[in-house]
Length: 362
View 1 (cartoon, helix red, strand yellow):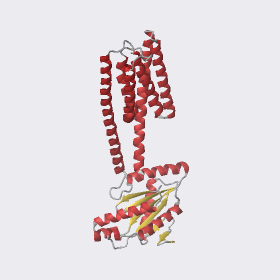
View 2 (cartoon, one colour):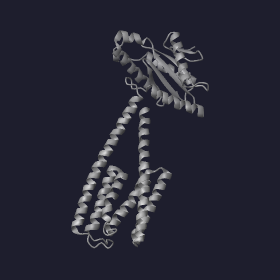
View 3 (cartoon, rainbow, N blue to C red):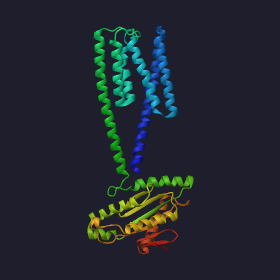
């Protein structure tokens, strides 16, 4: 269905953007860690250098694993875990001249960007607890940094403020993105759907026909089309009004959808003309389907829309051949439809000259 294709396309675009974002952040982060790791070695702070180098190697491995498997979780968590480790280490050790906590703000923003709103908020509270424990819990053996009480209070307060603002921003960004996806989906659906009947329109049918033609030429899978036109539809409009004519088109559209398979595509081709695409269907099978549709329309219950005149339809059937393209296939089905009308309407006609009239194949 067009709506499914639209949703898939939007999801693929979103995944591609996420993949690019993780790659850029991850590779930039690896380069950043390597630079400061080398700087830590020059300052003879070997433990800090080991933390930075270890985190960069872990992050690079995660990115490579993500690229090879196309599993984005490897990238997001592979970067987020080293960020948490570095965050805790910088607060516990103080980094260089007790400036380590200053890097914590940017580290949190990286996690928020990678994990999104919900997981980002959870990460914020986790980092906040880590910071409070490391700064305020007394006599932790692995905490070597010493901060003044004023600095610790201001750091925690500013970190909370940053977390609130970043969470609000990420929430609004995610909300806007979701609204964009919904609007894009609706626009795509509208562009491929007939406004009156809700069936596929010509654009959607053309795309599906091209797919089926490709499968036919590549794998030999046959497909057929049924061109259908309501008989004497103008008389219905003249006698009952165009409003009733529209109601009849809607009723017929619902009937066609009910009678065909899930993999078939029903299209309003124009006016009172409908086109049905039957994948994996040969000429004989498509004739049976067309006759089934003809009978269903012949006995359709018109009382619900207040039309007392009988309604019938004529059908032209055509199966793809190696010498045909889509335009020729449609033209052939249209010619067969004309022959059905020329022979008296309420009939199914195929290229072999066989006419299904009221259940009889001549």
